Length: 247
Image 1 (cartoon, rainbow, N blue to C red):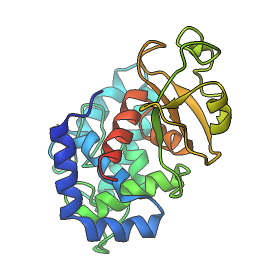
Image 2: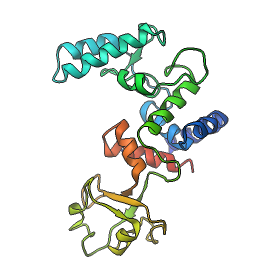
Image 3: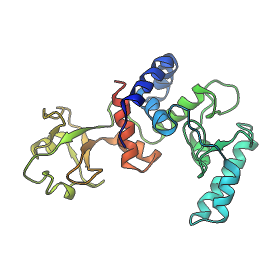
């Protein structure tokens, strides 16, 4: 998933527009605001594309007729509870074909766990209230183990030879091989521009989303929090890349 310059430009414009609100929320939840904006941008193009499906019928269909019917039955019950609690009407509960809702594309179970009423009006409105949208996303990341003293990761270059070379790197590409940056440096891995990795000894792991001959990334613990939102490496890297444009 490539992040085009046009989306980076829109991210910067939205960040500037909502900067005061974003910084207050970032401070409250311990999440850098650029990641909240990046998730918003990748999920719904900054609230522009929410999905036009009525969530209750969509979930009812999946609960009745699908491989994961038990999962969607629970999501349907959670969606009905959200309506019953007065956060949104059934008519306004719009989302994706799979029931992901609002500007942050929360499944109903995620809504019930993480959605926030930031403006204090008694409703957790992830469809139309910007403070609620941003606070809910930040709360999700915080609840997924987010650390605000580190970033998500970085693109790196692999050495031509050795254990971390393209010929061998797939042996290191898994979620269990965590090494200090100094250990990756010793294997010949450098920043994408060829300079040395940071001196800070953070634990990281190697991600090769396109295989050994494609892009390479060293990712930190915050990358795992993004994966809890969406299990796709392409999604997580897109969020990280867009967030970097806001540094």
